[in-house]
Image 1 (cartoon, rainbow, N blue to C red):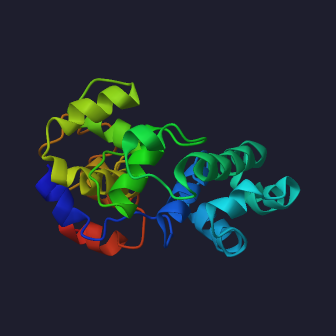
Image 2 (spheres, rainbow, N blue to C red):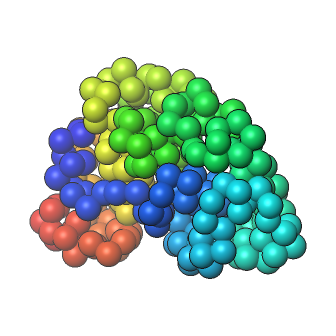
Amino acid sequence: MHRILTETHPDAHCELDFTTPLELAVATVLSAQTTDVRVNLTTPRLFAKYRTAEDYAGADRAEMEEILKPTGFFRAKTNSLIGLGQALVERFGGELPATLDELVTLPGIGRKTANVVLGNAFGVPGITVDTHFGRLSRRFGWTTEEDPVKVEHEVGALFERKDWTMLSHRLIFHGRRVCHARKPACGACTLSALCPSYGTGPTDLPTAVKLLKGPRVDELAALVGA
């Protein structure tokens, strides 16, 4: 199934824009309860104003809230980013640490965010259990767990550690483009012959193809003969 996902989504990657580990950590914190597209529209202004941990630590709360307002839950996110900056300055010399145990001690950063940062900014393999990853890993029969940490460990045991980061991207891409929550495009899915949940969504090709999303809809359709 992973081999087919690799062939289906050769463009799989982290869809948050960033140039430094700190920027990725901030973008991932902001991605809660909103889309990566919305975050990417917001972060250029944020990153231009706040470049270092010290900048976040000393930020004017009202100014930051105004910038973050489009991402939703902007007051809580402002608290997290100011707290993140202060913690980095006080405990890590202003630098983002590169271990899971240290990252999860920081404000606004749980295991999911930590694994995103480790895998994409530091090259340390990590499994990112977001809503898409959890949904698909259960649909595929890779786990029956609901708890993200248990999902992370069960699915991680099925794959080589070196594949964890890209596996996460491929499942997330598939979840956003093909295997949707309410109506998956089962009839237009490259995994249809292997998936125990086949039939959850429409199985006839013309109906299923219309459910495909993303910039490669024509290519995804062609992979299933449409």
